[in-house]
Image 1 (cartoon, rainbow, N blue to C red):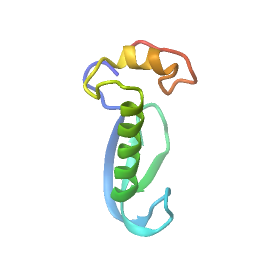
Image 2 (cartoon, rainbow, N blue to C red; image 1 turned 135 degrees about the vertical axis):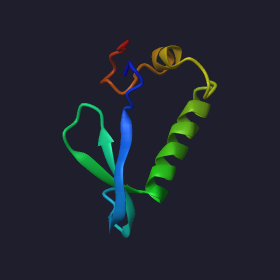
Image 3 (cartoon, rainbow, N blue to C red; image 1 turned 120 degrees about the horizontal axis):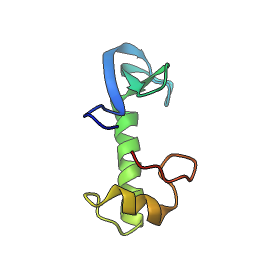
Length: 87
């Protein structure tokens, strides 16, 4: 993701159903770079996902502000099916 492009972006927000909890809520349409489909997620579920990332980082004994390349190597995966990918 060079050039300042974002991996995740919020396209818009509206009243709808969250695709994670399936509850009627205010949801954000989330675009993922390189993927043609958008997902709908409420702020509560998005917050829970962020909390899960934080718990996993703390479980590795790594600093959340640390080097992502080193963290991916320690964890053995970086969201690319176990392949360490450098951009």
